[in-house]
View (cartoon, helix red, strand yellow):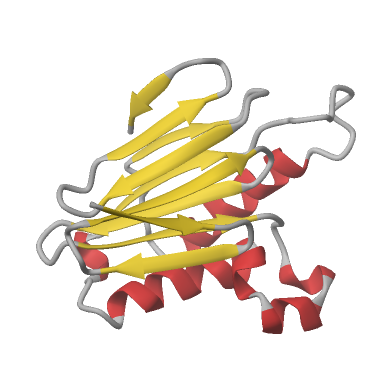
Length: 160
């Protein structure tokens, strides 16, 4: 088994069933895991911010930083190696309110809302999720079977 690390503002895709895609330190950021079980193609995105209009130049060099540029890129990257939209299983985690006790910035909630709008506009359903609250998360996507595990700083590990 080969672990492929997905950094912050990053995405990785693979069609190798021996691969495990993993991302760490999801606070207000969101991880989108997609998987096509027929061809065993999967991808993992770790985006930070909801909208690329905040910094168009940054979006050009780092599309995975934003929901509106990273999510389409994730899906297109999976399609390029054999996945089909109608078979894709979508699981999401993150969007916490870390270091925002007064709920002033609400970046986690804004990320969740942006993600949901993008999915809604593209007729994509979320199959499972672990979002919100006030905890950090680590997400693992196993390409052999599509299993998606979320470990939280609350001490829980659950399968989405």
